[in-house]
Amino acid sequence: MSGRIVGFAPCADAESRLLILGSFPSVKSRAEGFYYGNPHNRFWKTVCAYFGEEVPSDVAGKRDFLARRHIALWDVVLSCEIRGSADASIREEEVADVAGLVEGSRIAAVFCNGKLSHKLLTARVTPLSVPVVCLPSTSPANPRFDAAVWHNALQGVFGGRS
Image 1 (cartoon, rainbow, N blue to C red):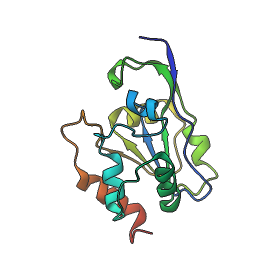
Image 2: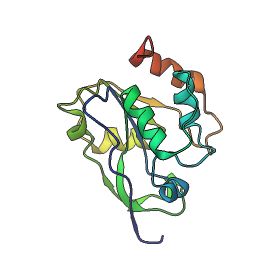
Image 3: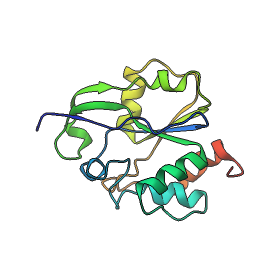
């Protein structure tokens, strides 16, 4: 372990309707300074494809996409000790106040991007007043990723692709 590492602040605004929670930013995301910065991670391709959009080329474009589509991003782990990008190596984690973000907001659902975010959310965070869905991780390390599962979940929140 190389010491404590701090993740990102939530990317959310007053119009956010969906919160997508990861576990903790990867090395490549931390280098880029924004969520899902590894070009092999399927997150941006999957979510943008649902809305029929191209993946934005920079962080400003990604922030604009999220705002226009009313999607908030955050990670369950605020800070931790971690080796590389491996979720399995996360230790001494500080968990985010997800309930504090959701309560009083327009967020109507929370999607967990992978099993670890779901496990930590359900075990360590105050129960939420909105549905929580565990989706297959978009990480390139997940051989069982299925974009159709994500598409169906997004359809449940956005219906006509607002």
